[in-house]
Length: 276
Image 1: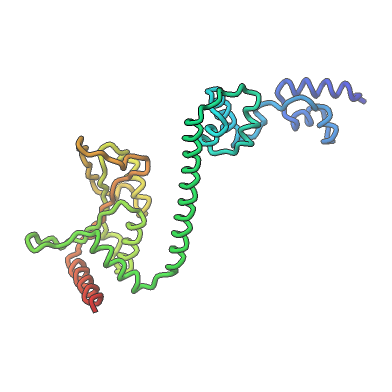
Image 2: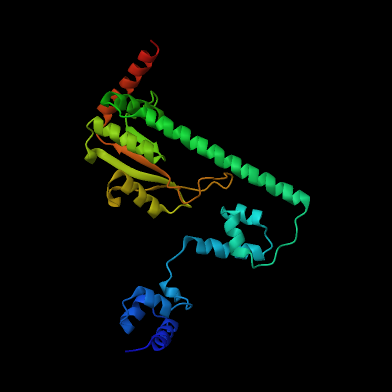
């Protein structure tokens, strides 16, 4: 029988070759976990066996910031993690030079403001969630009235000087689009009567936006009409330039003259009723 020292030497050698505990167990035929742990004790596991740790990246970044001369407060503000964690991660690194009082005051003020913003955001989300819960389910009549108002606010309208009795709705808010489509479904407007196209700024990812809108409304991208590209105006400072910018979706209904007239009549009825 192989003695302990020989097994220990073999296990250590295999560990240093980069084998996992399971591989060493199978190679040496050891099925007692306590014995296996003793045999490889003190030998670090190979890197490939380590599970990704969400804090590894934070730890590396904290050490990087510390070497740049940042204090615990500054690192906490930058990374959003606790001071106790930062202390454990960087305690072997040299301390930065002491800040002057004015810089300390500015940092303290910034930390207070960050905290205040977090509190305000939590209150904002709480209010929204409570308000959302107050709505509950919608009856068909409630959805009908909401849809009429939604169309009259955002849809195209007929003019006496330019007769265009078209049912055309344009919006960039996906929730508005989905509510409008639910309303059209309630009105029994067949899906094949709907026409879609995108309006978007030339600097955006047009193909990605088209695909996103097509998936939202549940049609193949080939169902979309020709996209309208908006040219850049150098005098305008655009703020909708992040990855969430997808332009607007235009939804048209064919064979819609009768429907448009009814929508206008429904809106007139709502305004008469609202005035008592």
